[in-house]
View 1 (cartoon, helix red, strand yellow):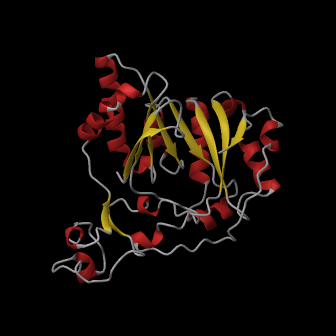
View 2: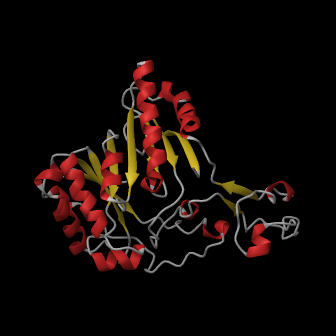
View 3: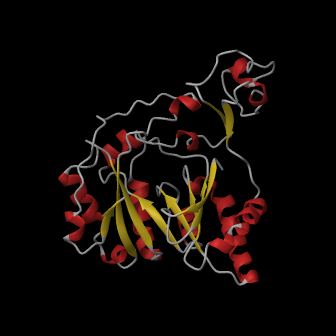
Length: 289
């Protein structure tokens, strides 16, 4: 995990705990969680505050010896300003379940737990184990809450179905309907994602479609119309809760230097076009977050 946020109110109904799992198969040009890309624990450095005193360069550090940080944490206790931290903590399914259940009294019947990332399905065996343990805890305690996930949909069909069947709802990201554009801006084509979107219609688990609106990438009238048309099928409409548009966040690149990456978006940053008409004209509930 690279973060666990309690009292979350934007990741599903009610009051929730959102669990952010590390590792993602996509490399979206606008990603604002660069610490979630690598599946491994890693050191994050507040570069703007760093004193450059050199005390963190400890003997045996993998970063110094090989150029690759292993996330061992040796340097953290040597930083006089505390400007270094580890992003990524390893849990067993049992330990994570225990932590999530400690907060379950505040969920109520509508709230619960949402798994995000990164991409949660990248750790599908772990995720399935935690979901099963949470269901067991609910059965034994009589305490009911909902389980959700936010996914980009890029995973094998069997993995996708196996996880989705364990959920009460999910957020499904639609980055771009055009495969070539999807590959250009995320590093992968969208065939697998669209296949899982169709599979979601067959499974009919309630879902919210989330569309990040990126200026000059997917915010043209044709792009938004194509997304609305994609969702306007009988199978998807019967389980589609609503559509949420997420305008580009100008602060997306703020954390890249902290994990040793540079933020180089392949588009002109600015304010994206926002148009709900293609959805509302089809009777699809849509809003802007």
